[in-house]
Length: 147
Image (cartoon, rainbow, N blue to C red; front, side, top):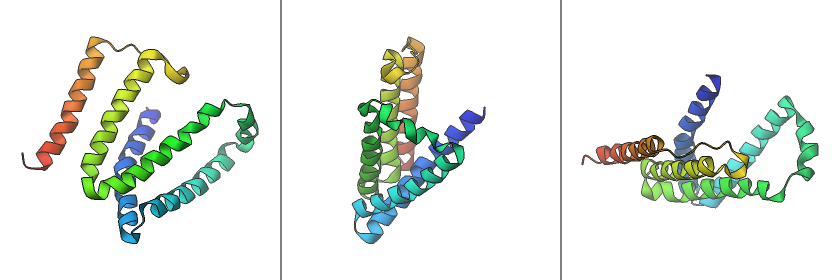
């Protein structure tokens, strides 16, 4: 249960991160600079967490396949895109499409066991659930417009 709560908190943080960093980027007139500051703060926080929980992991980095480090590019793309797009597209719209993308990629990763993930087949029931979630996300945005 604690895993679910941690991930719920992470999910709550995504739109907050988007709103805060979009506002910072707009406030300073430089979304890329705002993203750089975000990463500097994140680096410090992650460094403290790594120091507390076990810095020995750094010694094993050289043994890891290089493609695993592309995750850093993906998080940079997310932060840069949300910082640039959210002020003009809206936080809700931006997060809606981020969530849709997450649902699509998570289903593909689970279906094929990509990147060493546990295989979870895309059954008709799961596909219906994903469709229902997508429809729910769309309805939340339409309802916010008074449609």
